[in-house]
Amino acid sequence: MNTGAGKTGLHPRNRYRGRYDFARLIACCPALSAFVAPNLYGDASVDYANPAAVKALNRALLDDGYGLKNWDVPPGYLCPPIPGRSDYVHYLADLLGAGAKIPRGRAVVVLDLGTGANCIYPLIGASEYGWRFVGLDIDPVALCWARTLVAANPGIADLIECRLQSSTMECFKGAIQAGEQFDLTMCNPPFHASAEEAAAGTRRKIHNLGGKKRLTPVLNFGGKNGELWCAGGELAFVRRMIVQSVAVGRQCKWFTTLVSKNAHLPRLEQALRHAQAAEVRVIEMAQGQKKSRILAWRFW
Image 1 (cartoon, one colour):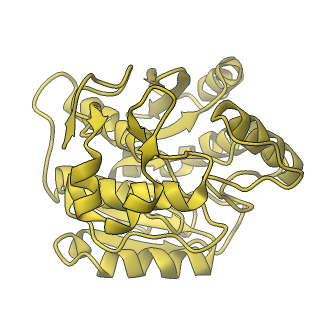
Image 2: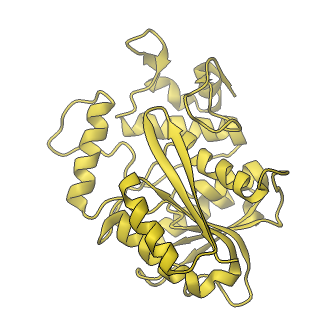
């Protein structure tokens, strides 16, 4: 799908490692052409601080890479960077494969905590590996939108189920049903502790992307309460997830979550020791200068 030099740090199986072939992407999504222009180096690019440009690029990437049609998110909801989201899925495939053959097909079942309106992990995971997904969210609007995206892609629609989580404080209770077994859980937790902190992070992001300063920043990746922030931020959310995973420890092979701040790892690893996890792994990821990591644990 891409041509040119690889993007630094992306997983070897990531379909978006090379430079974007904008002519091909525009053929998939003609609306993208309005946002493509030469950058400072004379290469075709888009303004990543422009929400409409990011959304059009995402739509083209998903169509060209996976044949996913009609992808979109409602105003104000999280518009994710597709290459980074793909990396999480690929590293989880490696985790399940354990150095052997990567498991494919509907026998693999994944629970996505906070699937969001974009439904990005189930859409990519079902398309790339043929896995089955249960996408969980507390927001009925987001869940309705996710179901619409799934229905718009009949080739994978039977692989994805979207469920409403009625409690904002429960990760697994009421979501994992009696007798259900999952190979993985995955989660992109809310990183910030407040709306103000999330807005400050957005301003830094826009500045780093070369965008103009704004008193009220335009969220180039969007995000609402529960997507970008929650009480206590990432640390509190993941610690709660660890504590609650004990009760369903026999119903899931691996629990995983993204962790944005390396400084949080010691306290999270301490929580896992207290929970008596049988095995803990930290998987480093990188997309250019952006660093992140997957925290994975299991009880058997």
